[in-house]
Length: 132
Length: 433
Image (cartoon, rainbow over all chains, first blue to last red):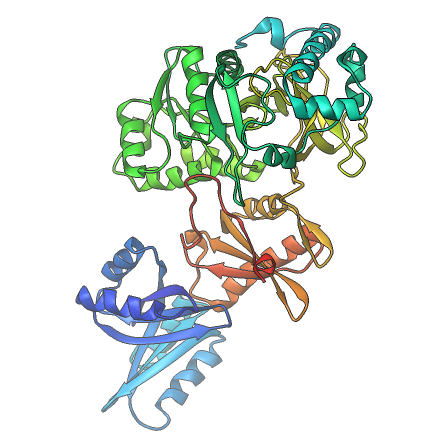
């Protein structure tokens, strides 16, 4: 399914991400998943949260460079080969993946994908019955 | 409109004659009243009778900023303290400031030249002007203040700081003009956008910005953000303060009030005059001042002078854009770098905010230049590659303009300090070692 992901630009400085987590925590916004893409100067934190619009407004208010991006979240059984099936379907359709990250708990696993072509990606997953 | 047509539209020949006469009088004044000048002229074998016209000005010795420090505080005054009614001082970052003393007549001249500036920007008697330059020793606040008062406009003497109140009064009092430093204007622009008042409820349409060098890119930025026309006001504490020169509606250079402040351009290395239109160091002789008249004061500003009549009708000489101050020039890996060059690149790129900081350091005996820039909100991406592309683009453009390879750091929004006075754009760590 299509979900909203927050992307926050952060300089590589001590305490920057701590501040973000505090802000969200105090506002009662829950984080489901996050990942950090970094280089020597800055990082981009990608977050899946309970209330993305509220979180964006809150962070903007505190002068963070934050944007909301559409990504695809796929749920699948937490078993060997499940992701392979999905990746194959996406790859065969010629959809390129900018980045992705995954998390699993108990019986289910979740993959968040930022494809180059969101509509095509969703269509492929719908056809392949991959739980998207 | 033109405030003083007689002076601002005088023929070049008449102007030279007037300047010559005033120079002769001014030389007599300093020779008779100011010992350091008298000694210097005597050392060169000069007496006031040797200066008979403008052509003789090249015989006169130069005055430097160092002289003003050496004769601190009153050594270069040509009027007794009983005649001095006010002092101002420059923001000296190291050691003692430079002190300038004004007689009552000097203050009148200051008001007169200031009124010429604000008239050229389109300010009229019925207009409210918010003066958000700092009031105090700095010439900005009181200079712009007396300019607007002389013109007959309504001054709101806000001074700098207290931004929320600035915006509230600008809104409530219906200020048409805003006078402040360009960097503070940018700060106010952000504050105005964040304020509860919609732009259409403001009457603001004219900005008079100065006291620090700024670029065309910054002008565009200010005009777009504030929805105004932005004009440059030029001045130096040593000469009088803001009002030495101004732009007109054609914005084709800065008209100088040359009937009071006679400008020359000299080669900064040799001190020899350059041909009209050529770039060099700007030198001023004040030819009407009483308190602290200066002969051939070297401003350290690099620019050029143009004598063709302007479309606005003024015949007064126009100064080109100031490329930088000789003193602002950084030498990095043997290459001359001006902060204004960096600014021009940054303001051209829509991906960037018009704020920057240069950090110069020496690591393993090699000079390094780091340029900190803020990315415009609309251009932040969730993809690292896109951010790196922005950085690469900035590095390339800077390298082609500066001739050296800088390290560009993308920093978070509003993390570069917004100045409320003169912007601090350079941190040179080499000097601290």
